[in-house]
Length: 118
Length: 115
Image (tube, rainbow over all chains, first blue to last red; front, side, top):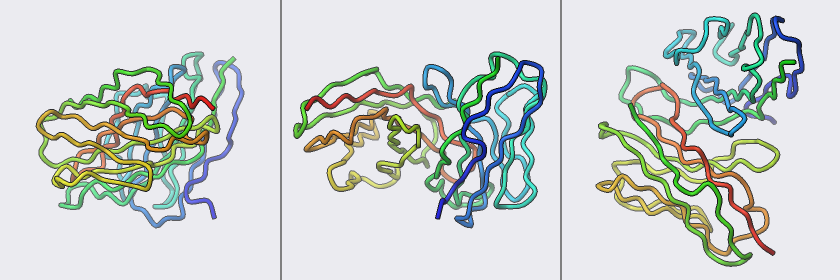
């Protein structure tokens, strides 16, 4: 029973293409995230979604767009791929709820998607 | 903005010995959480240990324990009886309490276990 799953695990594509990465969690969490890990292993938050609402967007290019059809899914769409988009993308989920007194709960990560843009 | 600093890009330890990984952070918040995540070559991010800032007691999980010094904004990870399976990248991370704005990570420490 995979808690947070991502598909595909590997994605190789040409510059200029549009691609999507899917993420699903079966933990019943109400917040999901996307992180980017660059070639130097540095992890940076890109987006988080709570109850279908975007909570934060860390100045990523607007070629990246998160889409959440329901609480258990947060997909990442990338348009006009560039060489610099090559990285590992991680999805994560937690039970944190923005605007409440609830504390930041532990984030559980998916296996990552290695994106290579040629 | 919060920052997390891991000053040791790489550490090496003999199997069965103890090693300590350093982490410092900077924040103006009073309610926050700190985490250590492990990333083996499989690239899966695995939670090692978590510390609530309001708790004075240091968190412990089996062979893993932390030394949380709130005033100094220091959060080091001690691994006792190191095992070959502990070899991985270790990331220190900060999360703001009461929010869902993601974790801020340090640059990581690559831990090598010598047999």
